[in-house]
Image 1 (cartoon, helix red, strand yellow):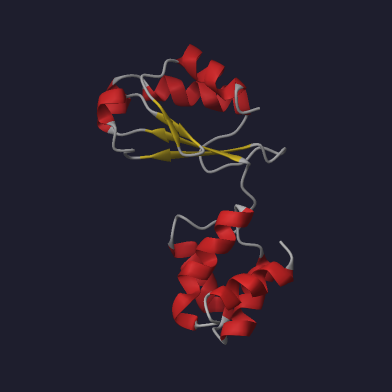
Image 2 (tube, rainbow, N blue to C red; image 1 turned 135 degrees about the vertical axis):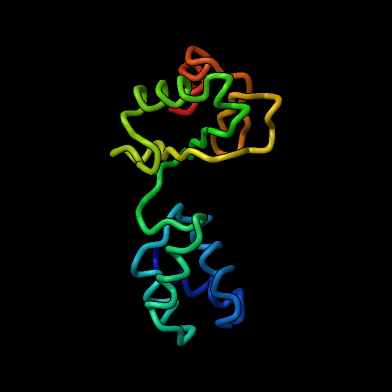
Length: 150
């Protein structure tokens, strides 16, 4: 992400330190992660210590300090999904992508996370990819669905 774009996002929020989280969210949204150069620029422009920005960026799960894949996969491991086979679905995704929860593949195609609930328990097991919910997933359906995102 270029520094000019970081400056535009900061200016959009009137260069106010009180908008720090929203600035970080905007950068995360565009870039899929928060590069160190962007955090340093925010620190400089908002006069907020870099350590404070890093504390915030590491506290909230919405932020990532490492590159993320183009497609975010979230697998529900909540009770309803778990009893309906979420572990088998997770195993399938791990096998097909070569990554474990919390990881991103080397091609920056996929990032994998497990979540405790996606709020659609009747559809379990549930996989969310790029915000799109896929319900009643089996390992075979999971494999077919992933092919659409390659």
